[in-house]
Image 1 (cartoon, helix red, strand yellow):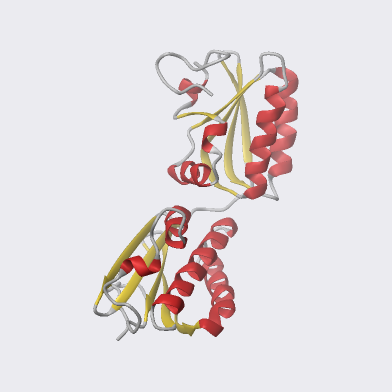
Image 2 (image 1 turned 90 degrees about the vertical axis):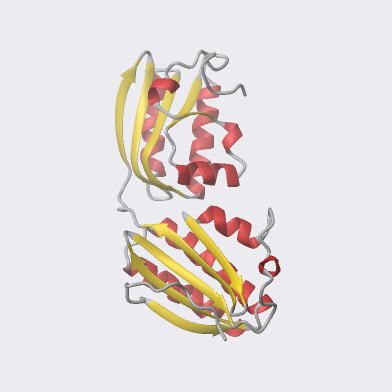
Length: 257
């Protein structure tokens, strides 16, 4: 008997059974429904990757087949994968939730993850908040001798040139830059590469400094997962960021390089 999810009042957008031969079709189907539901392009990639990992676990460890459900509720998209209950019921470790495992990565790609197991098998439910996807908007200001670029929207392959142009202008006006990430909804691989490039640009300037301010929990989690968190100076607010002394952090917060 397959696992059952807690009852939801929302009608499912997708409800399908799969086996090992159906994972490719599963990825494309999840992507199409997630886009239609309003999930941003970049987050769709994460959802598809997570769905594939969960489905593969169900196939390998849960009896060779499983079931996937997708629904939208409370401004979030929820995806659930359950195995057939014919593999190793009652043993969630079989799905591998240790550090570096597939489930460990899934947990860091989504906003919430719930894993349950029992006589019915194993069931994993993941959720991603739906945010308005838009082009990158950049607001420029000067605060205590720092050039502050407040970013709003997605930093991805489409919008990296916008950031590059704004940073080039900022580098000509100040050697100290704060990137305010409070309103950034998503950063893809090209966006993270651009942030590294910005850091290198300002490190090369006399007395140059770059500080990231106010990244969301999502972005902070992504920075840590990619091993990039410790490569930047990061503060919770712009006010804290502009208090940084060149060559190190103020005594009241932050950490040294």
